[in-house]
Amino acid sequence: MAGSTYGNLFTISTWGESHGKALGVVVDGCPAGISLCEEDIQIYLNRRKPGQSDFSTKRNEADAVQILSGVFEGKTTGTPISMVVFNEDQHSKDYGDIATCYRPGHADYSFDAKYGFRDYRGGGRSSGRETIGRVAAGAIAAKVLGTLGIELTAYTRSVGTNTINYDNFDKSEIMKNSLYMPDKACAEKTATYLKDIMKDLDSIGSSVECVITGVPAGVGEPVFDKLDALLARGLMSIGAVKAVEIGDGTLVSQALGSNNNDSFIIKDGKVAKATNHSGGILGGMSDGSDILVRASFKPTPSIYKEQHTVNSSMEETDIAIKGRHDPIIGPRAVVVVESMCAITLLDLLMINATSKIDNLLKIYK
Image 1 (cartoon, rainbow, N blue to C red):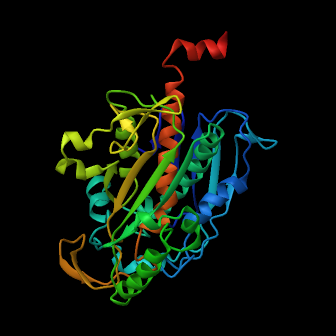
Image 2: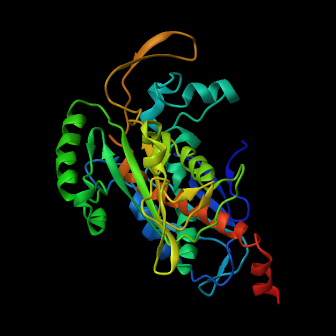
Image 3: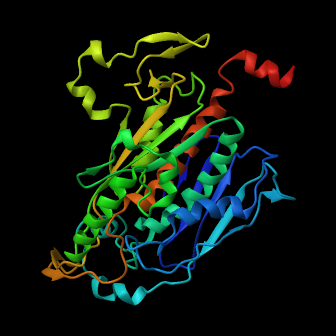
């Protein structure tokens, strides 16, 4: 299978299936000398593991990470960092009834068409558990970025038609509710709404937003490897993401140039912007203001309602999916969005180190 590796200098390669023995990731290109332990990774994995609320699958996994290589005496060595998480609570029998059926909204048919074979237990590589490797790698990337004064804050922006009120934005509230919303009132209202969705045996779509602060101007390559292009690529590679927006996103199609352009000003002796419609990116490069990126997730395709489909024998049939599934993807994907943004940004920062001779002189002369 091609396409399991992401990045240029800071690279990640994920492996494993939803119901296999384990999942993991190999991270290469991490600078030596970064303090790193399993707890640093576990904090991030705990944010995405199942069974933490009424709105996530009841699959009981500790998702305990083990670092196998690349760290010695608490420091990264500059060599590949391999990490593993063992599966403990697979119920493969839940998928026996759909072994020959193509679940609506899933990758079942696509896998059969491509490979002539598929792992029907929880979706195999298409499962949300694949993101364990991304999050483990993202924890490392975020730690490196933190040493540079760069901070990432991701949260659930909307669930269905319930959208946070930015006037009520409270960063400290994100980790206080199971939906990871920065608006307490909206989180409480949405929780009630979700319970009704679950009673109806259905699921709902959502969106996740990530704000990145402290990024210097000039990060990103001006043509094919634009910062916004690679952020979009990284986020679109997350299962169930159907759209990515930067800054004002699709609203720019309704804007006038005179309103959409961000005026430059001098603030504290530095070039700054009066507004941030661009989302912190101009010409594919960071402009020094906060980077704002948003990902929209489709409803969880595994629902308990009976659905019409076909099977591998080319017969039409109806199925009712069993097993344990999230009624919503966004909240558990908050840390996944944050991780992919961190991985993408760190990779481009490392590439950017060679953009000026002054940078090389600082290192070698």
